[in-house]
Image (cartoon, rainbow, N blue to C red):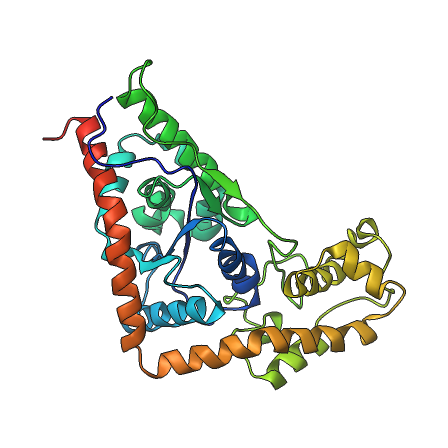
Length: 343
């Protein structure tokens, strides 16, 4: 196979985050904190996926403001723009172009199995947009456009990585010969850390979410020290003491959630945390968690506020990131077009 432009890297990460305002602790521990650690080990590309955001109605002014807020959070959390690429998705037209080609590879039956569409569309799926139904193909394009080998995701996104692998495999079968090397590698999901899914502070069976009507259910990255303290004090637990083993936490979702949060913020294993706090009650544990949370989130919140005072610097960073991303994306799309037969 004659590949004219692009080269498959030995290891590269791509991950995206939607530009939704009021980023919370779950976004930080579930994605951004892991990104900061990964950039030290591997070439990393991070995108604010604003094209995904418009699969549901958005106010344009709010979308722009949210894009700036998410960029500020990523930078404030420690993403080094000299080591990593950070850009907003819509600035790279190749995402949409590759998505169309992959639409002609993906099967309707594959999309019908996607559980997140059913959850997001609910009972009104007939009124849902094609974009909401089809966004997993755009997600596949996001990943494959950079020939990423690994994708940091939460548990709830693993199905989308499986779809991406199916699409990549089908593309390879359709457009490469048996004796030729596959064009797309099959990306691997990378799930890291004990707090891979941070749950609500009010209900341990639900994921922490900005859409929850209760502010007490989440810790926002912009919360003050007093707000963080009050939310953790009121976080739902149970009257039992902290056990010695994680097995004894499996039937106690709220307790497990707080232990997981402490574990991730402190970069220690759950076993280590249980060793330290076993036999103690949450009246002893919560003040320690409050202190740790404020220590870790305080500097991020402060830098976010500084960056958001004047978004010109954020725009410069995103523009530079887009230029770097385009240097990778353009050659890949050229090769894809060649393979499918475009002139």
